[in-house]
Amino acid sequence: MAGGKTVAEKILSAHSGNDVYAGDICFCEIDRMMAHDANGPMAVQAFRNMGGKKVCDPRKIFFIMDHACPAPYERAANLQKMLRDFAAEQGIAFYEAGEGVCHQLMIERGHAHAGELILGTDSHTCTYGAVGAFATGVGATDMGASMLTGRNWFKVPETIKVVLKGALMPGCSAKDIILTVIGRIGAAGANYKSVEFYGEYLDRCPLADRMTIANMVVEMGGKCGFLCFSGMEPKADPDAVYAAEWEINLEEVVPCVAKPHMVDNYAPVTEVEGTKIDVAFLGSCTNGRIEDLRIAARMLKGRHVAPGVRLIVTPASREVMLLAMREGIAEELMQAGAIFFTQGCGVCVGTHGGVPADGEVALSTANRNFKGRMGNSKAFIYLASPETVAASVLTGVITDPRQLGGVNERESNQIR
Amino acid sequence: MDRREEIRGRAWKYGDDVNTDVIYPGRYTYKLLTDEEAASHALEDLDPDFGKKMRKGDILVGGWNWGVGSAREQAVKCLKFKGVGAILAKSFARIYFRNCLNEGLFAIACPEAVDAIQDGEEISIDFEKGRVVTPAGEFPFEKYPAYVMGLVEAGGIIPYTKEKLKNRREERA
Image 1 (cartoon, chains in turn green, brown):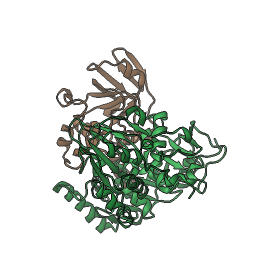
Image 2 (cartoon, chains in turn red, cyan):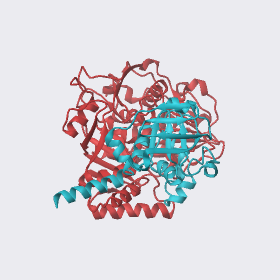
Image 3 (tube, chains in turn red, orange):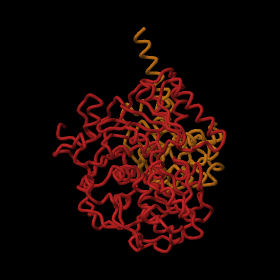
Image 4 (tube, one colour):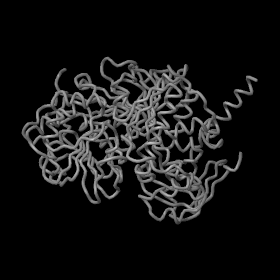
């Protein structure tokens, strides 16, 4: 077989030194590796168990503390210290608690680039497809082996093409697009596959919104995703072979949620309107960027969160927090009743902060609503956009953001 | 081939989309590191009786998309430490599947066998023939590519890499 290549086939070919196509197994040189405090310690353990003394190249490796930060108990503190010591000993870049969520930092600090092959000890590593990197999550042992040898094996994935046609309507956002796509394709619909997104929308929206979409590719089983905006390299060949093609008409995308307890449990907001909420979460590697906080602040400014609702905000990074302070957004959200929590992952993944009580309903801008996700298996999590979360905290029930005054078109929908 | 020629045990059957948060809850990812402790929380949010009924070598049987969710390897390790012989499912989520291979735990996809298996009955997985043997009949599954089989048979990527590095050193010497 020697036809045209998809983006994934091109990147894996370039990194293995062979012409590879979907289904082939290849051994590749890895450009960057990221490990966080939840899975990093086990990766170091695996590295040592393999007899590792020196990592392959410390410049390729990044340790980021974000899952339980600042450390809520001694075990976490000690594991983070273990990573801190290992990083110092090996010369690995180390991001301390509070710098931000790993995926935000990898892109914000310029550690992920188009055409690169990147591994991370986190399933949402696929976020870097927003800039055109082949980035995928691996377990800790895989990371340990990669840190030692600088290489790993890959099965070249098949690719699904998703074409986003037209423009979004007011009140809708990138989150509604990806929840709609996952609702159609299903939680395992892209299992083991690469997903290439196309459409003029990707040239109009900011990087933040491309990141929101790329971030959730794993929620349909995807190995990696590529947000193929016009400047992205490498490009797929015109005769590349796709496993499936989908078309999403953005004019038909509406504010929507993923109902408990699966990400593909799609419903338009209109179907669940009026559901009482107890906790709301604005943040995470999916929707914790300044663009998301701006929307919420614009909607909440001068108003107050409804009685009985706790709104937790975690900016995705220190940089986002600083911007929010500079722009007055942090103050507006605080005045409206928000609780700010350390930049990181704790609330989303249930490792630190914001745990809902038994039977409570959480409305979250994060990426997963599995049973137990936020730390309590007896709670119910709905996923939604920042627009929907902001509208709902004002009323105390799930609310269609289009119903609320002050919801304008997202800046991201307009030509930059 | 070594002891992996056949795996035999009782089948414990679960549904579709069994996710990493119910296999190994995030609230424990930080707290426990010993093998026994990790094993004691395996599947506790899905099947509170699992710890009691499970015997070493038993086989977990799941529907579509077993292991969906997090990259946390504890979701594989806890089952391995518990003594699970293999996981048989209609399909696996990608990272979970890869973590199984890296931990030396057999993950076999065979939807027809899953449909035929009743909870609690004895089944076996015959690697030589590439068949799942159940009271209702035998069902073929797709064997691993040679490289992957070597990885799992070595006991996972740690022993595999150690062996490879040792060989490389010996070649140089």
